Length: 369
Ligand code: SF4
View 1 (cartoon, rainbow, N blue to C red):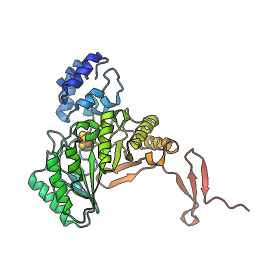
View 2 (view 1 turned 180 degrees about the vertical axis):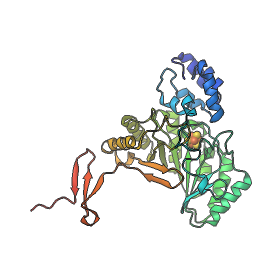
View 3 (view 1 turned 120 degrees about the vertical axis):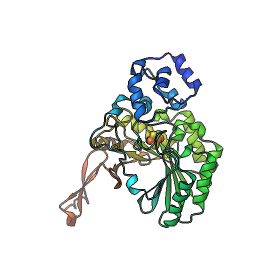
View 4 (view 1 turned 30 degrees about the horizontal axis):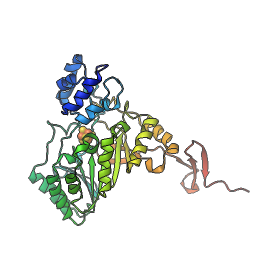
């Protein structure tokens, strides 16, 4: 859908204009899409929200038909193709939502979804039917009170995970109000914030935001959503360093995406870079069954092979867990690969173990005569 080439002067103009691209016209005028694709792009944008932040637009190389940033954010006619197993709510948020904004899937933790808008719209988003200007919007003040009342009333809730949408789109002032309310709930010990903001709009990581993030006084973690090392620009790395330097540990989550990061070298570079930035790779998600995202999904066996390839060559602290969110809301589980096979039934307590180089061993080792 993109033009095959663009003069570099125009590319620089694009950065200077510093405007979020939201419509087919914007994409064509910026040189990121061809005029002949305008009608198809309009159809995609009518179905799913589109937004590309200025810093991401600047990262896209219009001359590269396989640009991994473009693939994540530029709409594609393939999104209009849905297959039978895809769903509007692929991980079953609604089935576990006792009040607006809360998803209570596991006993000791809840998601708190305050906003359903984002600074960018990822083309593979698992909540793509809920987010965007035509999505579920922002919780009203009354809904926020009810969501916090739910957390307060359920004393087994140990961890609250702010997600969305993009929770850091809230102003620091509004974020502080929520954080201070959480501060008053003794049984909540952990606040986790899932965000794409530092990677797509690093200028939004301000001292004000950092103060707001810390204002609950609870142990607070920031989980960065990032899929390719090209997203980790100098500005993004500086924004993440500010977060960590302020005493907030960072983890990352990535989605395994065909044409973006579905090879071992790309994942290797990404995970090493994250660790160098003091961000622990936490999850590599298998692509969810979100409508119109089949062109991004790999098979689980491809994902397992990638993880197997990384096992021997990456430090343990650079290895995320490869996980599948079971469709319908049954939860998230690691999906291998598996290095251990039982031999001779459970009572025999004997195993065949695969080492990082693919060799096989008995555990416990055979006893010499
Ligand atoms: S930032 Fe998250 S919620 Fe927003 S579009 Fe991307 S994946 Fe979806």
